Length: 403
Image (cartoon, rainbow, N blue to C red; front, side):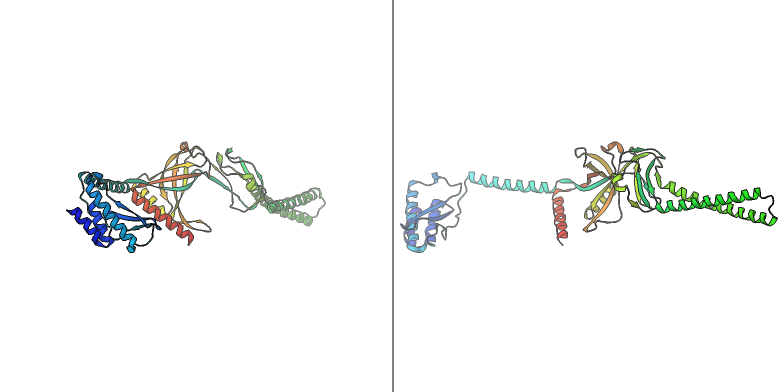
């Protein structure tokens, strides 16, 4: 029989590969390994690896007896020096998996395994192709559209700050007062010249009125000098009026009612020199519209621009002020700046500004310059593409920073 042939061949094979092949065929196992248990006594253990489809019911007592004898033959060959040495565990040459017929149960397990693999692959593909919303997150600042700045009319020193941040002002109310030393000196000089001119004019008028014994020549001289003094006095007065008007303009006055937007005015301006055209203070109408200025990285500006062009209304943006992070508000981004701006003096990054118009009723805090975190919806794309693209952007950005 095949069992007896296997036994005889085990005694005659003289090589480990042949004996292992016979043992695997006899037991229906896939492979055999050896473990040296005790090198001194040359004790070796053989382990046969069978598949899940092989059960103990498939091996009768006769086959078990033949397998034991075959295993002892393999052990003798190993001890005789044909093994790989005294390693604790070796895969025996020739102990390759044997083809074992599958039972119905084994066939079902294989089929189930492939079905699970196919289902997992399909799930991965479905997740990769599932459309998700791509969003651009960026930092934003809040500014009122009705902002009214006030500038220094001329150079000088800030001598008084008459309002503070958040204060409500009325039209005609004084905001800031400047002092110009040169202008004050000119006014003092013109005032002195005018006083001297008026005193001299009064003396000549009195002399003319009292001088009934004056000759015609003296009278003509006095009249001529009086006329000259009157012309000089008029010119000095005109110059003095101009200087006084400039002095009045050094007090900056609100042209319309509103709320002071500038912060920490006294510390920033008090006793500080300013030049003509420098902004001193600004006011705004709290109940008007507001502008959310969003700072978008240059490499993501194209997505925002496409989202704006796809919709007649613009791209939807959600934002939360840093002072109220739990309150999410919405707006519409309708336009982007046409030019790219540097993110900072020493930064290689480029940014593009986008503006969203916000109604005042939607704002929990109406403060000029408030910081917010904005998220712009830019349409839907496959999830796999979104992950790969963001990973590429992250790596590229990191490399640019290192470069």
